[in-house]
Image (cartoon, rainbow, N blue to C red; front, side, top):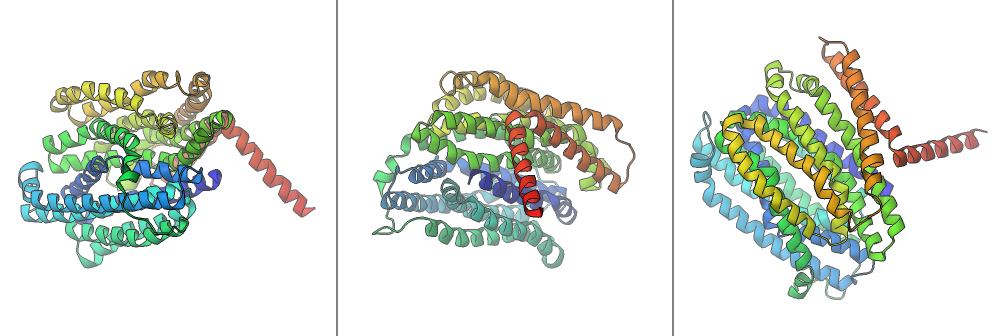
Length: 505
């Protein structure tokens, strides 16, 4: 099931990322870079809403995994789900109303608008609030399905919705209205449809109970410690990861904020690649930790960590070394690509360090240990926020991006040391050496070699082939220098060949 879920998650999240990235040049073409900056503001708004989640949906996902391990009966898990549903709907309504009331102030006083009419920006903010509220509700059902490990079915829904969301938006802009309001209205329609589909998917996966689920404060209070820890982590993570965007949305023009948004969007694709691995491994960590199956937990942890390094690390090296070629091919705008490329390189490096910490973080959450992340992130915020205030006015987006690199390098080098004193205490050296250093260094060497021998001044086809073959070579090199990934590849290749020759002869 773990392998199947990883593959399904990659297909689903990969397709979602493709739909999110592929049409950005068309969005800019029909909306303009200033209006596209509002899409960046919407992404920031969605992150804000994670604070209002109060840790409920991650806690719900964990309880669904524990339900599979026997920690809940049918009635108690349905009561918890119904309780969080009702709380989530109330929060979503409050969010939509609050953004509607603040829309004029956001358009006139916060956003640095140059060309768009203020009233159009205010209307866009209202619609953004509604869409964000719908996605807030949608996340309750997504996290529950992830915890139940029904991830193949979830990704089928994800692929269909991502296609409608991305391709449908292009159709709306070309044939109905090339306006930012039309774009967000379409996003709201798809989010509402997603909620309608996910509700029966989730409830069908749960066993029947006598009352079918009811609101229960007792059910909520049982998870409050874990949820409170997640809420604090979310708040601190928000400050660490979004303070740059908040300040830059105020300090930069909406046009230049749009440039930063594009670079951050591409770099954030690395997080989307890591997400499928997180989704598949976290429920398995939780089950193994609940059973105190230490040997299986160690093996699963190293497999997950090496998958992160091979798949996400190799892609990050591709973005760092070949980012300028990717942007040129993607946008077909030399000036735009040249403007964004330095930001993409720096942000990709910082995000690479960040994703290397995903497996240690998932391991901590599986054990219900949130305190370490809270302490570490609190110290980081106390250092980071003043640094951004000092750097942003003088060095702008590039300076802030370098702070992101230093922060995440500190996690990998220092913060993780504390975790290995309590969890998997004999596995630190293997994590650094086999899970990270070997595949990552091999990928870097291969990327630099391919860049050195690659021709210059290529056309579109040539640029595409350079990107394709460089990524293939980097992935292969990383995979065969990661011991457990290499072992699994040999096993499955050998098994496949054996079945082929047995069937043939």
